[in-house]
Amino acid sequence: IRYMVSLKTSTSSAVPAESHRAVLNTWTILFGITISVRIALTNIAPITDCDEPFNYWEPVHFLHFGNGLQTWEYANQYALRTYTYVLPLSLISRFCAVVMGVNSKVTIFRILRISVGATTALCECLFAKSMANAFGDFVGISTLFITGFCPGMFHCSPALLPSTSAMQLFMLSSWRLFQYQDHTGAIFFGLVATLCIGWPFSAALFAPTGFSALLLAWNTEQKDDKAVAIRKKEPAQSVRHRIRAILTVLGRTIFQTILIQALVFIIDYTYYGRLTWPCLNILMYNAASGGDELYGVEPISYYVKNILLNFNVIALLALVSIPLLIVSRRSTDDPNLSRKLVMIMTPLFLWLLLILPRPHKEERFLFPVYPLICLAGALGLEKLAQLVADLFVGCSSKQSPPNYSNRWMRCKFWTAAFILAPCALLSVSRSMALITYYTAPLNIYSTLHDVVLDSNSQRKISQYPAHESLKKMSVVCVAGEWYRFPSSYFLPSDALELGFLTSSFTGQLPQPFMPLGSAATSKELPQAFNDQNKEEKTRYVKGGISSCNFLIELMLESDPDGIGRGQPDGLEHMMNDGKENGAQWEKIASFPFLDAEKTGLLGRTLYLPGLLRRILSIDVVFAEYTLFQRK
Image (cartoon, rainbow, N blue to C red):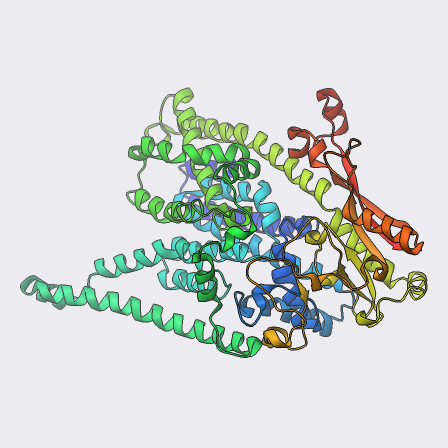
């Protein structure tokens, strides 16, 4: 940034070409670094939402391998999810297995996560470049830097969730709009986000783009002299031209909508066996009383805490960016600044107005506006740095001789660096905490995959055949830890399957896909689904713990008085198995997992080195995320 600044403030006639090359080289390097870092970090990021494996990775696995776990949203009578969203990744999965010759399903899973993370990184780069084009290189590079280190982008970038895809498509739409003033391309990405990912709520993000396209069409003037002369004599001619321009935009958008929705209809008809519209189904479900509220309600402070946790000081800069921009708007030489700010920031406020009133709140609902929070933080950072530079240098760069201008720019740069350095440190510490405290499930299921494929383990497993109803496959059972199952990509095909044991959770669990998939009607299913999150007893493994070859449990320490936290559900099942059947279980592997209840706020929020923890007297308590095998 300092090199680019020095080029821009120089008066040499040879500078424009050199400055242009420097800017291009800088962005090329930044693109390469951003994408490389995302790829490197993708598979050490934890899966933070159980919707990701059960609603998206499992259907991807089913489309490729013909088996997996089905949730009620994919049931034929409800059809809340579109197969258009998961189909592309299933094709990549097949490509990895058939063309690349990848035999390990875990490796395929990691490649798929890398593809999602790399796509997000590319979208981040294009978004930041377009923001540099709109608001200057300082804002663009600061935006990319913030998205690169903030914990929110770290764990949402590889997530296979519609909210992450909506975020990606919004960044691409903004890139087309602010880099090329291409409303048609921007609207296209908005239509894909609304119709193809099964999350029609994302339309709110793109509404300002559509309104801008209509406004631009209304204000478009014909350039030829004859048309201008006609308009002077006949004002109605101008109105007709404006109406034609608006109708052209509407017609083009409707044409794109028809083509995209026709493709979605064809794909969903193929897999549901009937004509259905998941976008409409999910809208109707969420509009109905008690829809998403069945899965928990939270106060608005839930989102405030998540934003502060994921963005720390950047969130505060984003909050003050608007008043800072209002105060300094007269000092800018860009007459279109206000219009561009309204265009890019309106989606943020529309989205917050959409999700804040909803009783059911989840962090993933904030994903689509994470880049906008980073941008708002970058804008606030620039204005704050400019105010500090004005205060200490005493004059603006535009009103000063070159030597004062250089001093002003250096002061602005170091002010921004002074603010961003602790932000980056806090953010890296938070990301390290996520990796250290919460990646045990991915590690334990990877270990399980290797254990099952090991020849010695296979021989030991054969001594304990599973229940007849399970076709003598080995079964790995979960009780209270069912929601941390990463996906069937971690279960070797024809060797291992997942089984559920009873636990304190009394909601509806998934069941295996039938060969017909979502085309199977409720009469053809072993047990019909319901849309009220009611427990279905048939979801539990037949024969209980006696049918399990492996068991995975988080071994949290119970309270000695027996009043507070009780024993883990899986441990109780193993103890009952020992009493009733004389069975013995041995620990195969374990990984540390944070015991949040027994760890203080600072200890569970940030990763702190051991020496610093001792100095601050902070205790971080871990439990064992453990894999057991029947002896």
